[in-house]
Each structure stands twice: as structure tokens, then as C-alpha cells.
Image (cartoon, helix red, strand yellow):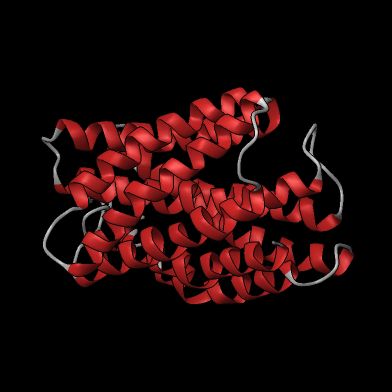
Length: 272
């Protein structure tokens, strides 16, 4: 399972996040120098826990903090902005969890294996799902479904994260909220284009697996294990929702949809 989880997280660091950062119109320097931090971060996943792995993870954390800083440069707190800010901050939370996990110690009540389990969730639900929800809301600003998606996806992802530290029942609540948002996302993404349809179809099925697993964890009922969840939900989310979904947005020239509109007196070059 460790190899599969590492492959999924590596894909997120080296492929998914750069795709998403382009859609967010971050400063060119961030996009240019991202590999200088993401590659060491990805390498740290494959090394034994210890000082070397932690040092490489720290480089990744430094870059993600720069990305998170861009959230403070955005204006407004409408549903779209909540989703986009969540996408901007999530990589830093993931990188912090990676750094702690690579040192070989736990965090509060969560052991190192629990932190490792959180890494795909933070890269995909925290970043990709929130970003896509923001893209959809910007496309359909007057749509109630788009507003619901832009609210429930980041709230659900954040609730799941808190649930890692509080307990399985809160994690289940977060999974249910996130699933609601992702179903709205899948419905609204069902448009012309093979990649959009494929991403929507995968999304509709894979979120149910996460809910079933979270329910088993919360109530202690027999169910499929984490290995099976990673091999199904994890792989499908990484390839179907994240990779196909972001490629679909890029291909359809949606890159400008979540860029901050320049305020009076602010030049377009200063946009986050």
C-alpha cells in the first residue's frame, strides 16, 4: 500500500498541482520554481523516515507556504473565493503533514501512518476538488448548485482533516458533506467533451467508496480495508477527477476563470 500511496502523492506533487497552479494564475516565479521544491518533496516520500527525508520535505513546505500566501492577496469571501482559498492553502497543510510524517513522529493523537493516509486526501480533496468547485462557480455564478458545490467541497475537505485528529464520526460527517459537493461538481461538469464526462463519471462512483470506508471507521463495522480503498478510490480520484478534470479545464481555455479581477488602481500583473 505504501508504494501505491507514494505514487498517488507523487503524481499530485509533480503533475496535478502544477496544472492547478496554472489555472490559478499565480505569479510566474511560483510556477517556474515549483519543481525545485516539488521534486525534493516527492523524493522524500521514497526515503526512510529521518533527517534527510525531513529536510527534503521542508523544501516542499517552503514553496507551498508561498502558494498559501497568495490566498491572502485575494479579495472577497463568496463561495468561489472560499473554494479557491482552500485550494491555495491545502498544499501547505499537506506539506506540513509530510514534514512531520517524514521525521517519524506523530502529531497529537495521529501516528505517522495516519499522517501518511492524510496526504492523498489533502492533495486531491483539499486542492483539486476545491479548485474545480471554484472553477465551476466562476463559470455558473448564478447557479444555486454551483454555490452549494463551492461551499460544501471545501467545508467537507476541512471537516475530514479535523476528523483525523478528533475522531471517525466527524470524519464521516466531512465525507458526507464532501460527497454532496462533489456530486454537484460532477453534475455541473457533465458537458461536451470526453474528459469532462469521464471525470464526472469517475467522481460520482469514487466518492461513495470514501463514504463507505469512513462509515466503517466511525462505527467499527466490518468493511473493506485501507489498501482496497487506496487501490480503488485513490487511483480513480487521482487519474479520473484530478488529472482528467484539470486537463479538461485547461483544454477548454478556462484558465482565466479563477484569476482575481484587478481592483481599481491595481494592474493585472499584480493578480494572485
